[in-house]
Amino acid sequence: MKKYKCSVCGYVYDPEVGDPNQEIPPGTPFEKLPNNWTCPICGAAKNDFVLED
Image (tube, rainbow, N blue to C red; front, top):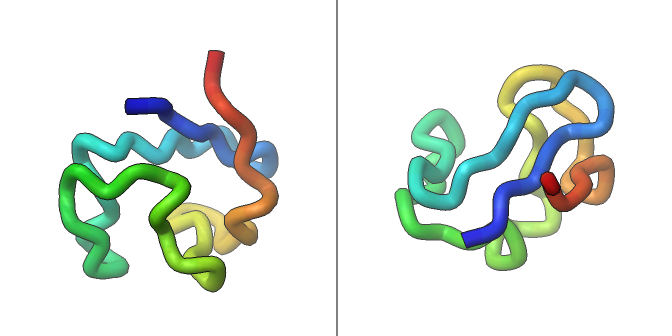
């Protein structure tokens, strides 16, 4: 699965881990995250994330 990186703080969303702090289960692809999901580190919006190379 593709990983996405926060362009503000560098946090990498790993779909294999999900985001337990925001009740996002492991296996959730970035594209399936709710539109109001935010970076768990800095609070940046989902559209501030870029596909990691």
